[in-house]
Image 1: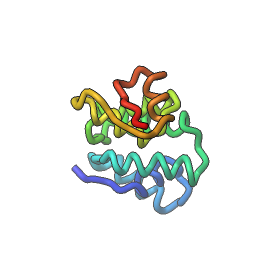
Image 2: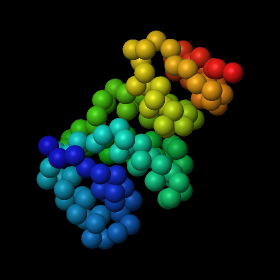
Image 3: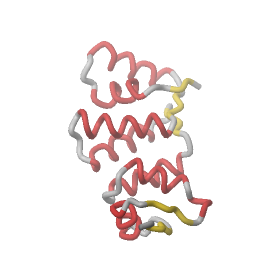
Image 4: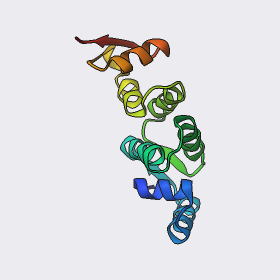
Length: 130
């Protein structure tokens, strides 16, 4: 298994650089690749902020990528839960943090938007600090 960096994921998804995109596609076809949550977090940010993709488009792209036979995400349950919450309007970083905190029972934040999103999406118990 081979771990990949954000630039490999992004080149594979956006195909905006002929040589690097082809190399990324070839690698993903020939190897089993492992993708960390941090690479997914950075990939989401790049796709949204630098390429202007909507959260729904990013979630669909990442979900399709992670569904490839050769792609193994770190903690798939956490990642797919976070993608679902992203599609529901939650910030992806917040969604990953919250999904990863599952066994803690509660999640504390000063971020009112995160707390409201979590409540709206029934995404666990979030303690809003003031």
